[in-house]
Figure 1 (spheres, rainbow, N blue to C red):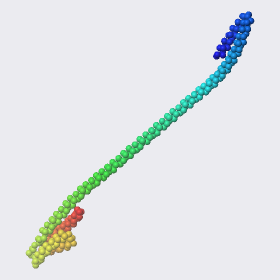
Figure 2: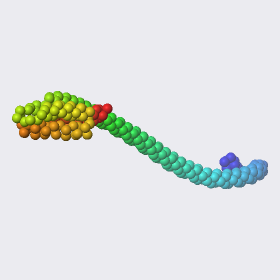
Figure 3: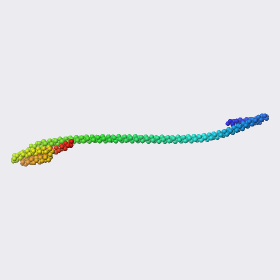
Figure 4: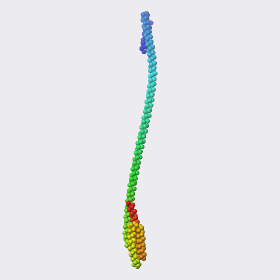
Amino acid sequence: MDALLKLAAVLTLLWGGWMYFKNSDSETELRKVRNELKVSKGEVGEAQASYEAEVKKRDALAEEVNALKEQNQQLEKDIRAKIKEKSERAAQERRDRLAAEEEAREERRKAREAELAKAKEERDAKWKQEEEEERKRQEEEDAKQEEEDAKYAAERAAERERSASQWQSEECKQKIKSANVKMQRYLSCRAYDPGDVQDYGRIDLLKKKWTLNVQACLKAANDGNRKKLKAASKALRDTANGLNSMSGGKNAGCLSDAAEVIEAAETIIDATKQLKKLNLQGR
């Protein structure tokens, strides 16, 4: 820019000198003007050289500017590429972060579901165990109750059996006692002598034998000796038949008395046997 101003000043000066020279007639002035023109030409040359140098600088600067523009454009392009790359990388990182967060949420969800499932399984197992324990406890209580009921029923049955056994024992004892009393009543024979039969004392002898036979039946019955009772009973019946025959059938009552004695003896035998059985069961 300075070279252009200087060149314009020189041209102005030349123009002024030329106009002065054209209008002047003096030789001295003419030489002076020539000298000034030489000087001016020199300055013009210098100005021209300076201008060309400035032009070269300008061109160089323009080239540099263009290079800088290209560099700037490339830089802007690189910056845009970097920004795009950074944006894409940020977007990818964001997608990756979101994916990681989603995966973490999914893992947490699965872990939560697994924890809930485990808790449910533990709770179900606990409930099942409690139900099993309750069932066992109920079964034990039922079994205990059944055992107590069975025990109570057995005790009641045993009590009833004892009561029945005692009652039967008392009944047997009473039968034995009554039968003994009954047989005692028949120790004295009620046969009589009709007086019209000559028996030479045989009826009295049979009456004594009767008493002995009744005593034998009584002893055999109370001893529980059925074999001896059988023999004594036969002898008693034979005696009764003899008494009846000797009296011409007028002592038929002896036959029924003998039957009563034998029946009472059999009662004692049976009752004694039953009493022993009851006593064994009572033990």
